[in-house]
Image 1: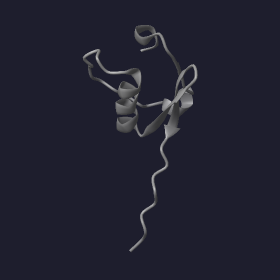
Image 2 (image 1 turned 120 degrees about the vertical axis):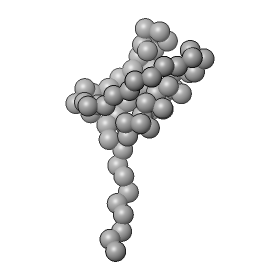
Image 3 (image 1 turned 180 degrees about the horizontal axis):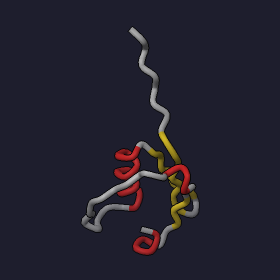
Image 4 (image 1 turned 30 degrees about the vertical axis):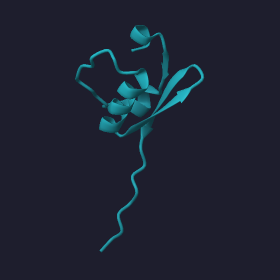
Length: 67
């Protein structure tokens, strides 16, 4: 994506280990649209910054109350 869209994607390898995506896009999507789809599937976060995008590790899930 960095080459195709001429953007910088910043991430820590250790935070995205064992995260995968297999699929295709039409080419009409923005980088943020693609990254949001990948992030939602893999429970990671993506944010836009001045130079590109930042991908961060696991999204904290709210704990369920015990019954």
